Image 1 (cartoon, rainbow, N blue to C red):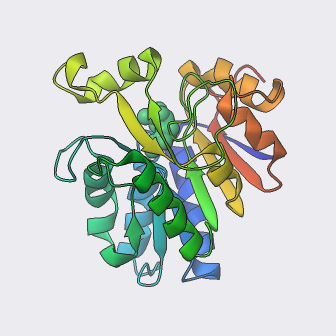
Image 2 (spheres, rainbow, N blue to C red):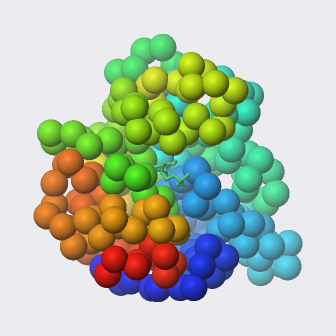
Length: 241
Ligand code: F6R
């Protein structure tokens, strides 16, 4: 694992965007695995700025997002489709037909998970997978568990994740209880992984992810077995190292 320690969230966002930009420049038709949440927003802003400066072309880029809430339609402002459209896609020249996000409205969970795995396969796999880190060590919505999930699946969100995400909803009752997510196996099949982590509140879990035992109780710890992981984290997040 390559670890870049940077000063703060803004520096993390600049470096994260630089690594993604390098991927797009070196392979214009690359497949990006994308994430939502607070962590990548600054990175997406920097990518948009590079696009506006004429330095980046998304016209051939393809994308596959990690996850989506089950039961939220695309136009719900908390859906991950809505997030991606408003924080990145609508600002750059990506072809929306080349973007992929699990369909939260497909009531047939098994069919949706199989369809999404097939989509990723048909794209030829993910070249660079962007990841944030949950406070319980989750990646995508792979919550602490007794085993690592190999494929896209439907999960019941933990109380910790529901609690962490309630800030985006009118009330905790509005937070969806389930989500579709790539499995840890799906994530591990990406050729390269870029994990971004910011903030003192992630310091303990980040230490466990990198230095603790590899265990499905800390899902991100599986990244220790991936041959090409770049971690960009700020001083606060790396304060326990
Ligand atoms: C989002 C995702 C989640 C987040 C994680 C961290 O698509 O898959 O695993 O990356 O919950 O969220 P933030 O960045 O909001 O702290």
